[in-house]
Image (tube, rainbow, N blue to C red; front, side, top):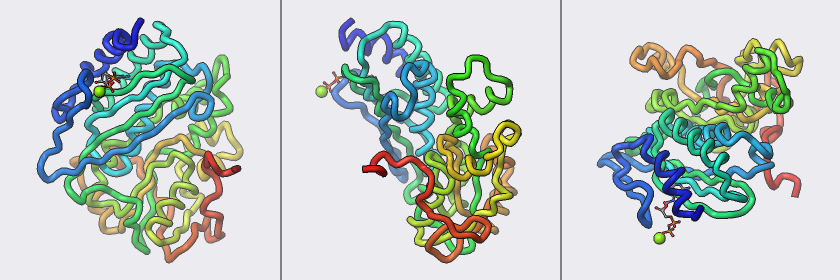
Length: 320
Ligand code: ADP
Ligand code: MG
């Protein structure tokens, strides 16, 4: 099977599965074309995932496709962007029909789920890796940046923290219990908080998605904002499964990555008016937890005890 056959057979159906109206031209030409309406800005981000580094070897292809697109989409959520389309640069050791079938099926489903159309890509041979560029839009100056946190703002997170980190030691479990399965689902199927991100536009002062762990990622947000902060650790949202299975639940919630929840800062009046908005049912506003407050910087403290902002999180070049 040649490169073009492969694209036609496995990736054009993905492009046809979800057609965003702003994607004027999808795969097949030298470039794709995206229309950006007047008054809107293009928001984009690229992520590379390498086998053995970002996902385990022999990871199921259907899960790999969904997880990769979810992780990429999470960056759009963190900016409050409306998802539009993505490109996929795929490097494969060989053209295995079974692998491609499962991967493209997973990608089509995820593409529909997140409202991201496949706009184009590149297909090459080599060790398995994926690079996804996602495109979204916001009204001009409407994106939620990391740098806008103000002293006195509340620090909030969505969902629960630490679950995906706890799943890492369970990935090879042949028959997981219900509680273990709940944690594994958080690792395999992260939920980019796209609806929440959009709902936070105009309310949150700053936002970031938690990919490397709360302490590390909130640390990035505070640093970008030139501020500091405090986390009340007893307020951290922990799932029942995590507290049941892990005595170190709190450590995982603070330092483990891969949850892809949003962490954002917001003034008290803005949180009140956000909560009084009944127009965002799908944004899961009821699952937001206030976990701390922005203070004069620098530094992040846990219950008043100062901590190293950079502790936790994964740094590819940290040991070089
Ligand atoms: P070029 O040589 O002009 O860069 P390619 O031969 O790499 O073009 O790709 C031909 C077309 O197929 C392009 O429109 C490209 O976007 C698309 N394409 C290639 N690989 C993929 C893929 N994995 N998924 C979707 N579209 C792809
Ligand atoms: Mg070309």
